[in-house]
Image (cartoon, rainbow, N blue to C red; front, side, top):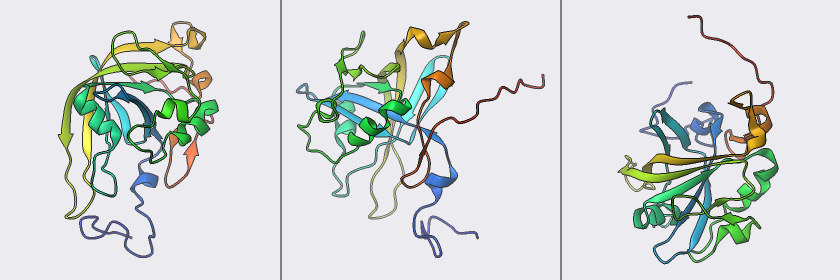
Length: 205
């Protein structure tokens, strides 16, 4: 089939927007932020990725609540222009899912999910202490994204990575053992995945 998503995001026979399933797998950015009054927040975003290695830059895209109000993460990074990204390994998948709840702004999702809020080295937001890797970031820019008339607003948060935490046990022969990190990725709908088979394929040049 072919369709124009500007006219209809899910024309028949589709019952859901297929983009999440087509552009997959996607890494999960488990974003830690803090409000202007010091309330911690932790939320997962599957519209997340690294977009530059030198200097390291990551992005994530929070949309608005169905009511049109900003999600806590976006409000927080506007007020305190810093955030952490904790990497979700397979044993943390359920805890990550718990932090996706629609909670009131005063709720601390670290406590909600029984996670350790570990202080960062360089910024105010905490990282997940149980995560085997995490990034400390400062906000470089926040860009409003296009939206359909009457649709939910979305924004692209661009972050400069200024600190990197890695479990020493993951470093083997000078490289991160990604298979041991066992990161969880988001597929379409409510589907998630882990790495499965990992193979090396050197470039032809």
